[in-house]
Length: 84
Image (cartoon, rainbow, N blue to C red; front, side, top):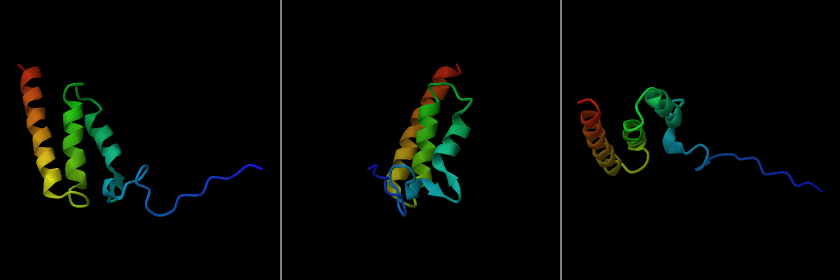
Protein backbone atom coordinates (compact mmCIF):
# COMPACT_ATOMS: atom_id res chain seq x y z
CA UNK A 1 0.00 0.00 0.00
CA UNK A 2 1.37 3.41 -1.01
CA UNK A 3 0.96 6.04 1.62
CA UNK A 4 0.07 9.53 0.44
CA UNK A 5 1.90 12.50 1.86
CA UNK A 6 -0.39 14.77 3.86
CA UNK A 7 -1.38 17.99 2.10
CA UNK A 8 0.06 21.13 3.64
CA UNK A 9 -2.46 23.65 4.83
CA UNK A 10 -1.96 26.80 6.80
CA UNK A 11 1.49 27.98 7.87
CA UNK A 12 4.46 26.41 6.07
CA UNK A 13 7.65 27.80 7.68
CA UNK A 14 9.95 26.09 5.16
CA UNK A 15 8.33 26.70 1.77
CA UNK A 16 6.22 29.80 2.42
CA UNK A 17 7.16 31.54 5.66
CA UNK A 18 4.59 34.20 6.51
CA UNK A 19 7.25 36.85 7.14
CA UNK A 20 8.53 36.48 3.53
CA UNK A 21 5.13 36.38 1.78
CA UNK A 22 3.58 39.81 2.10
CA UNK A 23 1.60 41.83 -0.44
CA UNK A 24 1.36 38.96 -2.91
CA UNK A 25 5.09 39.08 -3.70
CA UNK A 26 7.54 36.57 -2.27
CA UNK A 27 10.76 38.01 -0.92
CA UNK A 28 12.88 35.48 -2.85
CA UNK A 29 11.32 36.65 -6.14
CA UNK A 30 12.11 40.29 -5.33
CA UNK A 31 15.67 39.36 -4.33
CA UNK A 32 16.25 37.43 -7.55
CA UNK A 33 14.92 40.31 -9.65
CA UNK A 34 17.00 42.88 -7.76
CA UNK A 35 20.29 40.95 -7.86
CA UNK A 36 20.00 39.42 -11.34
CA UNK A 37 22.54 41.79 -12.89
CA UNK A 38 24.64 42.59 -9.81
CA UNK A 39 28.23 41.47 -9.51
CA UNK A 40 28.88 38.47 -7.33
CA UNK A 41 30.47 40.50 -4.56
CA UNK A 42 27.50 42.89 -4.24
CA UNK A 43 24.54 40.55 -4.65
CA UNK A 44 24.75 38.73 -1.27
CA UNK A 45 24.85 41.98 0.69
CA UNK A 46 21.99 43.52 -1.31
CA UNK A 47 19.94 40.35 -0.91
CA UNK A 48 20.34 40.43 2.86
CA UNK A 49 19.39 44.12 3.06
CA UNK A 50 16.14 43.39 1.24
CA UNK A 51 15.49 40.19 3.21
CA UNK A 52 15.79 41.86 6.61
CA UNK A 53 13.78 44.92 5.63
CA UNK A 54 11.12 42.71 4.05
CA UNK A 55 10.50 40.78 7.25
CA UNK A 56 11.13 43.39 9.97
CA UNK A 57 7.43 44.18 10.55
CA UNK A 58 6.59 40.48 10.84
CA UNK A 59 9.54 38.93 12.66
CA UNK A 60 12.28 40.71 14.64
CA UNK A 61 11.52 44.41 14.21
CA UNK A 62 14.42 46.68 15.12
CA UNK A 63 16.86 43.76 15.20
CA UNK A 64 16.11 43.08 11.53
CA UNK A 65 16.51 46.78 10.69
CA UNK A 66 19.90 46.79 12.44
CA UNK A 67 20.93 43.71 10.46
CA UNK A 68 19.83 45.40 7.22
CA UNK A 69 21.93 48.45 8.11
CA UNK A 70 24.93 46.21 8.83
CA UNK A 71 24.59 44.57 5.40
CA UNK A 72 23.98 47.94 3.72
CA UNK A 73 27.25 49.26 5.17
CA UNK A 74 29.02 46.14 3.92
CA UNK A 75 27.40 46.62 0.49
CA UNK A 76 28.62 50.22 0.42
CA UNK A 77 32.17 49.09 1.27
CA UNK A 78 32.12 46.45 -1.50
CA UNK A 79 30.70 48.98 -3.97
CA UNK A 80 33.55 51.42 -3.26
CA UNK A 81 36.13 48.61 -3.57
CA UNK A 82 34.78 47.41 -6.93
CA UNK A 83 34.14 50.84 -8.49
CA UNK A 84 37.54 52.51 -7.98
